[in-house]
Image (cartoon, rainbow, N blue to C red; front, side, top):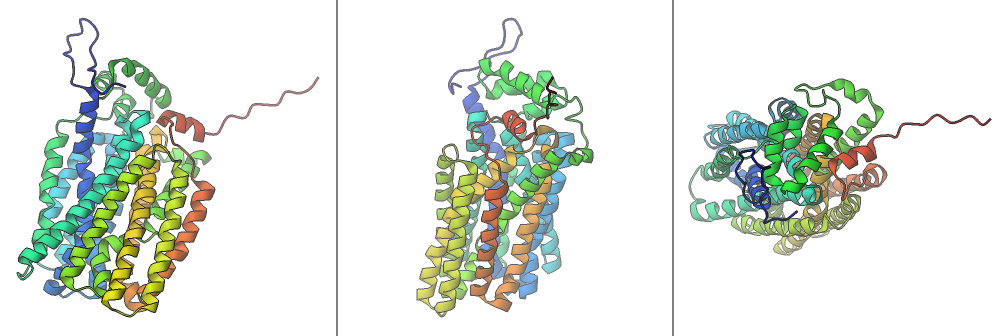
Length: 480
């Protein structure tokens, strides 16, 4: 597809030529992935803000876990609910609604007077984070051409880690500038208002998913949407492919039909999707993304030194995601997951060994920091990109929102478990044994991926469904 050609309407249809489909697709992707940026900022900002929240609200290990993980519990419900909502209302309208929830949750968190209200506000914010984690990749996968799907979906992953880097940098800047003032953590949380408002305004001008429109029998709108993001020659062919894949006139009905789960092959794919989501979180990545500043402080850095050092983790994550974008079209998804999980598991073992052998000192801190960076390099270059792309493409159209929602629910419940239990585990077991336990889980993750995860690289969504759907058994002919 040419990125510079403009699709033209058929003669006499009265429709003016549209801008370059390549440029339109890039603009739409940038707007939609502001949801990923908010996902990253709102999950990463707690990393530095927690130090000041502890001082102002006098958190214990239990309430520290509650403040951190309340967003993650909300995200689990948001991921589950976004599926039915997007089936009924459309992908675009769902993301618009999430933008409003992002704004409300950010304001409530920044103004929270105490622990209960902060926990409740972060739960509300989590609904938007979880919804965005499911709705944005689904939308991107459905508007992307087959050859560019991995690039578009991984752009969302890039925005997630960029949001986390932005959070780490803002935390360090705000701390160095106004760290002596009470309530500085409120400013850290409030920064998320800027991209939230941008998401709300930007989504007003993007088209609905053509696949959702076809599923809801809105053929004219689907063609208009495709004309904005495809070369004119590709529109008719893709419309035919989408119609064939959907097939069943009830496939896009605005309801959740749980009877589809009676089909064994659907249950198997759902099991794989749930497993992929859990695997991505049980690497222990968010023990670093949420508590990295505390880990570095315990390892020997001062408060401001830990906040500044933590920026390097964000930089590594962004750089590694660029590597992931480069590798996704070239390396099989399952291979990427395997390499990434081997790397993260090895890094966890190394952190556990160093934490056990070296006492709290500057030397230990400077050894732990590059090991954390190594872990994040494998996570963000290999594990996370492959995870989000696989979840966006392995499910058939008629169950995609439901299946991605259930997979997202499992992913966020795993994230909640890590976020809530990590400070309690470190307080009870110590940092070394905690990371040895994560490493043991990592071995099981590798075995799961090698045994169950299918390969989808280079296939259209319709071809993936055909590959995963069992072939009908033909009756054997009797010999005469």
